[in-house]
Length: 124
Image (tube, rainbow, N blue to C red):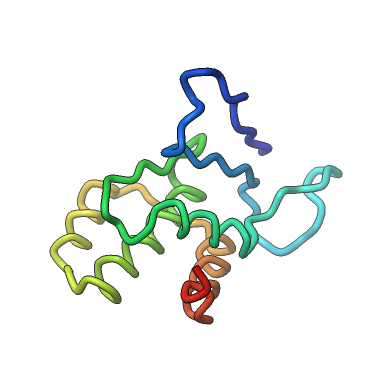
């Protein structure tokens, strides 16, 4: 399933909006139904981390279903903000309680986690 950002209209031109486009790829293949797919890449992880900072304001992450791609991004941010950096397990429990249907895309989760764990966060 190919997901595209809506064209930025006047009301959507905001420094608070980050729009990334990538498919719900569940393996590392280059083809999906004969079309080239847009895979989540480390540069996207970098853009997300640069955009959201260190969780100093609410963040809305959304995709078509809000389950796998956005779920993976939200799960990784939740893990690092609430366990690794801020040591707030109660916030993690809240995240799990209000997002019971999340089934994170493993490819997105792996790439995003690897980006953070390899120290690339320090380059920002």
